[in-house]
Image 1 (tube, protein in one colour):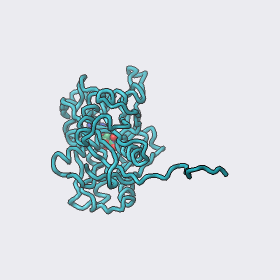
Image 2: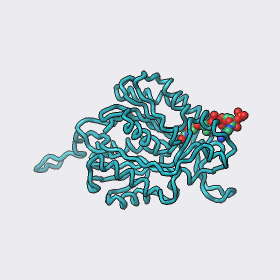
Image 3: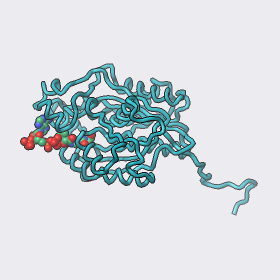
Image 4: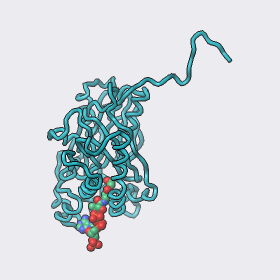
Length: 332
Ligand code: UT7
């Protein structure tokens, strides 16, 4: 046995750190697309779209509203709310499924636009990207590997939509949401419940289609995903609540991925939230913005006064993979 002058231990004892959301920011594209406009190309009907999905309008990004521009704008607002300088950020996580060009370059580009010289990592969890990223960011902060993480969820789903596809063309949309996750005196992000459903691995795909024009397109077996969601998500919500030591009535809001209004309402009914728990319905005029849908919905509830600082909200994301992740957060 070696003796040393000072006792050393490996690994060093963990410090008792907590992580919380410190700021949120969003970006909604300028151009609003109605169901009537979608149905000029798609073999569908505006009323059918409202009945089956709850969507009336959705924003589609124009050419200047790039992933970098939208992501950096949302992130800049989140940093301002958190009262942070770019140098306070040690890691950028970018959740997206519509950046088909590469790996971590988008995170680096967004960092460069903001003047953040932190390591950038892409999170590939599709529509679950924000909640998966939130949990990764919280672990990074509580482990001490970063003081503050910037999580950016940004999508241009309109780039990968086939306007003739009756199962997707009317559903998805564009936008960005960002959050700063940093150290806090009290825990502000609960334990995550996450997983994948391998049997539905091919239910949502984005692949190049040589028989089409060679570009990648989003394809979805909508009815299978719908059935899986309404059957399984209530149990995931209940597990996330019980791991946080909470009952449904302890929440101020339920903010699920904005995939389909019928899924949102069915899951909320199955869990049985009391009336004072607000249910996010951002989908009506935002559509399904994939990874960005949850921060967009959260921000809307804040701006409208439904959620206030200190309130508890349960977030649940799910999508391609099939991946899902749920956690309770305290509002900044
Ligand atoms: O964000 C990732 C996670 N994604 C989701 O959670 C999406 C889950 N799925 C859904 O939201 C729904 O499946 C959709 C909104 C995509 C589709 O709604 P649905 O009620 O599942 O439609 P369906 O595919 O079961 O089709 C029902 C009927 C069919 O007609 P018949 O066979 O009953 O006569 C379809 O041919 O609706 C017809 N239909 C349409 N009619 C007008 C299918 N698509 C359309 C359309 N317009 N676009």
